Length: 145
Image 1 (tube, rainbow, N blue to C red):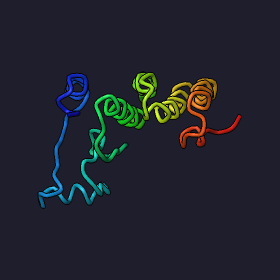
Image 2 (tube, one colour; image 1 turned 135 degrees about the vertical axis):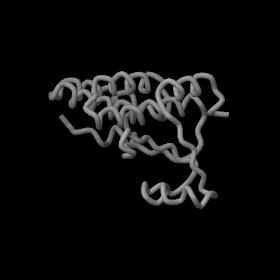
Image 3 (cartoon, rainbow, N blue to C red; image 1 turned 135 degrees about the horizontal axis):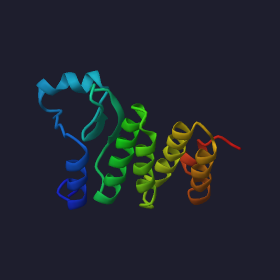
């Protein structure tokens, strides 16, 4: 199980205020509709203004889930001009070498650009992405240089 996993539970406790909504409870439907959440489970990352910055549907094992949590947190941090902190989360997610690593490297490049307003760090992350994960959808998205 994912949520009872110690590393997942500890990360959630340290970084988020969880909110559980259920598709079978009509009183929760307005939140689903207002945020374009189509299916459960969907993990959505909201900021303090209840704006969603990242969503991830479906079940996943703990080692994948933790990386997804880091990417979701990073998206929210970047939206609040905290790119350096986002980069820390994205680098940790990229180091896990799981299915979320290519996405983490892509966004690590974006966070680096936002932080330094330059392309050196962005292309460093994207070069690593295209070298380690060629042919992935995330590698195909990088700007050629």
